[in-house]
Length: 231
Image (cartoon, rainbow, N blue to C red; front, side, top):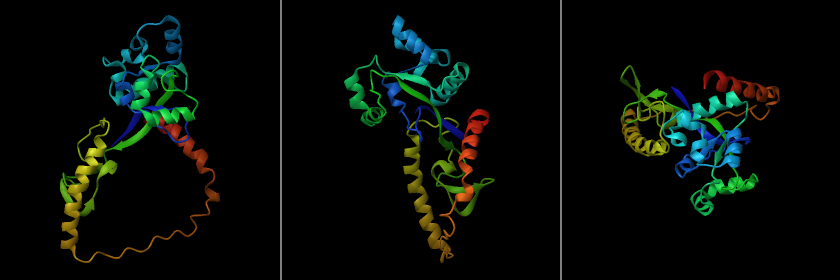
């Protein structure tokens, strides 16, 4: 139903590496490249130089949908490939103790958490909504249960999230619905009796994908189109 964008993915990675939103909760501030330069020259409170104050009364602590859209708008206006997540006004030791995984990844990229601003941009993250289910993960059609169809996780529309899934709620959802769903699957299996045999997976020919070489270019074009016109 929705495609959720994470607002702060590390720029320049083949596979997006997410900079947790907890870092903004810790005090990190989003700035444009230009405003970061001016802030270093003129000084003042870091939060006062964040473009996010124009988009949300919460500034850089805005919800991820607001922050992602705001950052996208700023990038389109500036022509830059990224904005900066600034942490140099924060205590370095506290940052490194609180975010060791991010610290390690930045070290690998030649960046130092604290002194160096982190180049970030929004990235497609999770699908929100999909197969309509009841509170036990049973698939629904027009409000009626579809026998044998169960869905949990990103593929399911449980009604717990809406358009803006809160951070880490997906983990709680997975735990709760996995337990509920497993109970009903067990009951359904016992009631259904013998389950039809499923043929083994056939993988012949999948190792030879030379004819699909142009797909890499097509995928990049599709990704850009989806971000520009759909996301």
